Image (cartoon, rainbow, N blue to C red):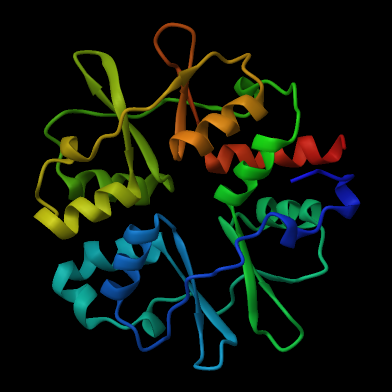
Length: 261
């Protein structure tokens, strides 16, 4: 897709149009299975006519799982755990404004609606990464990466890791074996494993290999890597990685890139 100056790039140019939605009467297990199947973290909640009434996120599902267990997900309804004041924008908003709003509000996605509140799309951190992958940029990824300050040790249970993620407000943690980085654990992969094997199962089996890039690598190059490998996080460092860049980090980079167009 060709790019245009930031004030003319519409949020709909890079938004996901085929939005996966749920009804308030759906169970949390329904929502969890959709997130796992489509590898997404946010589901707009609509009425039967498609009007937006809320948003259910991965953190909401994990919070319920930790408090209620798997059976709780089968019984609890989306309506009782959703955010009934989701961040939304109209279709004519620019991508720059949407990314700015995403950073100001601290959300991972913004729902796009028309004047009747009918859902027309969703712009997520993943969509922003796709934008960065096609826009030339020399901004170094090390400028937006976060230092690795917490490591997960082998043998930790899924419950322990998910509780730590909730406490630290992160969706990604690094697993360390014998003092070396072994890979990255994501909240979504841990949710999948928890539904299959239970919260007491070891988290090690959910670890995913993560590509490593040098800190001077251009953001656009790293974004293209994340898209092509379907990665939510990439390790950053010259020898042993000392930081990590996630889709959330890349949103900060996107605002800088957009401001220079």
